[in-house]
Length: 166
Image (tube, rainbow, N blue to C red; front, side, top):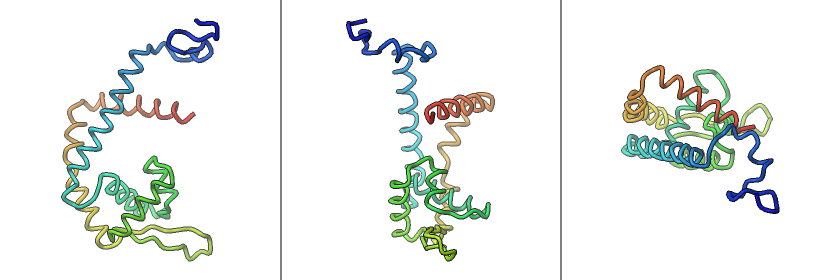
């Protein structure tokens, strides 16, 4: 510790409390694995759907809008943002690009509230069906680990995500 109470790594004693014995090396390795895995999976999904003229994020948004439609839940930009785990501004930009591509429509609610409702167009439905058929690589990658390992991975990632939200 230096005179300011920080260790050689810059961490104060207060900051080091509650770290559950995660070393700097382990933190770096796990962080790197999470980021690299996410980037690789997004790139693989993008490659899967590139021939459709959409990105993996646009395909995900089509999936969310379709799921909301099936549930009978209003497909609003806020709900789509929530289900895509994104902030509203980038989601609005995504939806605007998708509307320009003719995949969705965005209309104001007739209920008098200033609410935008998102719906799939015929082109959006066709693209969604093609997107669902094109998804090949990610299931193969995830299928490389056992059902028990996938359950453990899901549980661990959910726990990390919850802690990150606190």
